[in-house]
View 1: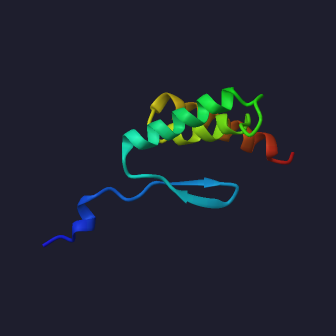
View 2: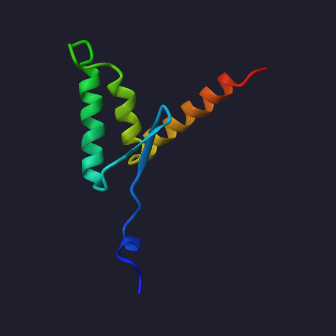
Length: 86
């Protein structure tokens, strides 16, 4: 017999500045959260909202869409090459 937890996918986690956050298991909810963060980030000139929401929303969406994931990986590779001394 298998445990009930083995049939379900493991919870996805996002690491931001060394802290890990667990994302919801529902794909639709993850897409909604990412979309809302990007939308409100575009309105970052308003009080309370901020442009910091755009990269966070794209990070959430990168776990769902290959095109966004590809851009995130390219950015990470570029950033690591830039930080490398020499």
